[in-house]
Length: 182
Image (cartoon, rainbow, N blue to C red):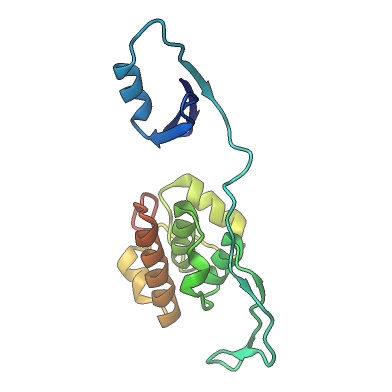
């Protein structure tokens, strides 16, 4: 057996039948079940260089452009990448549910956090706070703001973005470990 340990999960590939399995406790289970000293087990830690292939939604250019409630032209065209959608969430712009479907759990969390960041939420997680400080110069964390105060400022677009992102998290089977409520 050959183990490839990737972050928190252990990947075990049995080369005899070309089957692979993974899970957070898989390595421990295998090591308990296969204590035969003659069996060759090798553990290697690897760092991924690429994310699994996925396809983001591509929005074609529309003419005439879509107009928002304020009379401002919204030109939404291109590939809806996590970074682009996070910027839209931070700017309280429309986000479609289909755009969120290919996102990983941490990318969906970031979309949710962007809504809170725009309103000045002080993230206890220093990594998240640093991300938004670098993400947009308009992010001004305020340690005195509490979640109810921030949520009282939410626009209908904020609420819709949060709803769509939370549904996408649920559909993907994510647990919201690093959300704005932490």
